[in-house]
Length: 76
Image (tube, rainbow, N blue to C red; front, side, top):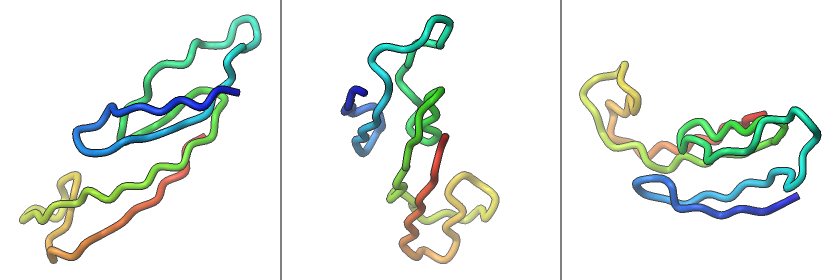
């Protein structure tokens, strides 16, 4: 297992674990997207603290009441 830290978001940092040596045929780990940190064969926990106010309830943020929102997502 290898712990990797990265600053690959506009505002924030992340860390994740993945196998340093995989099995033959396993996909190679790549830098995950900040909003969907999916790595094949791994488990990730994402903490989203960036949610600016918005007028559109159906956009990516959806914060129409201007309240701070915190989200936790699990990816495996």
